[in-house]
Image (cartoon, rainbow over all chains, first blue to last red):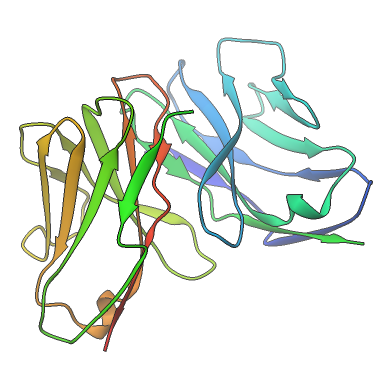
Amino acid sequence: AQTVTQSQPEMSVQEAETVTLSCTYDTSESDYYLFWYKQPPSRQMILVIRQEAYKQQNATENRFSVNFQKAAKSFSLKISDSQLGDAAMYFCAYRGYGNKLVFGAGTILRVKS
Amino acid sequence: GAVVSQHPSWVICKSGTSVKIECRSLDFQATTMFWYRQFPKQSLMLMATSNEGSKATYEQGVEKDKFLINHASLTLSTLTVTSAHPEDSSFYICSARFKQNTEAFFGQGTRLTVV
């Protein structure tokens, strides 16, 4: 079975600074997708960024980028120029052949002004 | 992205009663819907997967007679918590996707409190 591990229960970042959230996963599948979701206090799940495993190029969405290391099974999220609105719970997720999302435990991100 | 609407946003019910939560895809036909449960400050745990017109597939440890899932149309799935007890109090989230290997979109969740 696939597993997703987020080893940082909480992280803090100063406004306008950069922060990196860690995620590792375990799988024997060769074709899969990785995601980062944001869950603000409203608890609405918001897709931040997606990476297809067959793509070597790291995905980027504005201030959000990933460092995808397939051999190491690592998928970290970098948030640049952090804003107060980035404060949320962030979940790393995996989707493979079973087409079900497997979530990590989550990382609470606090942004200090 | 597509819109998935979940109703109600919150509900309080008495122990022993049943409560129904609806999940609707508003602007696309959802062939598959997923139901999750989330405890405070914890991750989302998949409860079941439902495909339109067929019986739901439940994850290990989830009581199918307790959590009844119906996916009668391409835009609506319902989760009924039967004979609710305080330990069923939780945040329930649905997601829906158009077809396999496409992105799933999430509803806003339902906070259930059983008193």
